[in-house]
Image 1 (cartoon, helix red, strand yellow):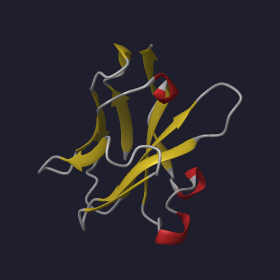
Image 2: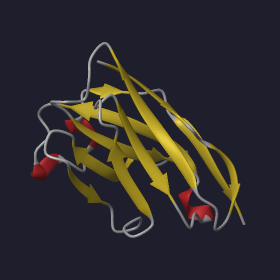
Image 3: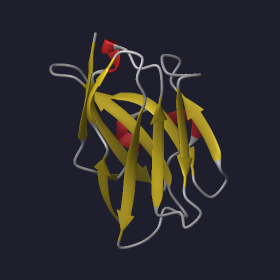
Length: 125
């Protein structure tokens, strides 16, 4: 499966933005899809994830209550709805997919086998 992430942009603090992660060459039916973000000089940080077949979701504490991960009925796109954005959310956001993701490794980027190209989110104060 190939992934394409898009939807980033420049917004002001307090604004909302929705990112999309689209699958090609297959669906996300049997995958766990995670959103991560990365800033220069830092490691890729877990944001949110979903086990698509089960519909289960999980979030980093820093975004819980502000971000929502979901997927479409065709299981070809996973979304990250971001609200109440603040400058600390500024990063390149990546989506990853993996079939061997389990609870214990779900927040590690190493658990995900496929990655999109990243989309930049910039939040101005």
